[in-house]
Every structure is written in structure tokens, then in C-alpha cells.
Length: 102
Image (cartoon, rainbow, N blue to C red; front, side, top):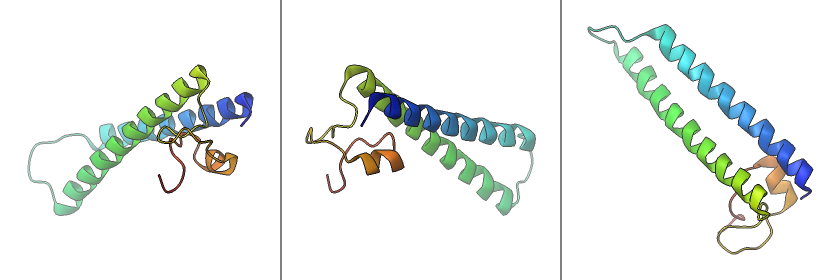
């Protein structure tokens, strides 16, 4: 994949992730942490949001590794086999680290 296209894809992915993280943080701030009994629905939502936040942080870490591979000239190569990752996969998942099936 062309370096400029890879950079563009990674930039778009970073913007998406950072916006999702900021939105989740804003929702958490709006809900507040009031002491007292929480209903099961509120508790479920809080736990769901915490899981979503952890997932987004992991996706951001994966993206940062992809950006480092781009800078090192190894972007688009599987971290397992060293084989090229198809461009179609990178278009769909810019931070992909492996080929399907690895």
C-alpha cells in the first residue's frame, strides 16, 4: 500500500478513536458518580461503558503500533509471518497486524 494512503487511513482511524473516547468520557462526566443505590440499568450501563473504554484504549494502542510500523517502513507486513497484508484488509482495518488466519 502507498505510504500516503496508509498515513491517511491511520489518521482517519485515530480521529475516529479519539472522538469515540472523548464522547464516552463526556457521557461519563454527565452521568456523574453520585453515591447511593444504583439501579441495575445504571450499573449495567456504567460497566458497559467501562468495557467500551478499555476496548477503545486497546484499539488506540494497536493504532499506535501501526503508526510506528509505518514510520519504520514495515507497515502492511504481518507481525507474525512478515507476509504482506492485502490492501483490501488494510483499507477495512488500517491497524491490522496480521493476515486473516494467522
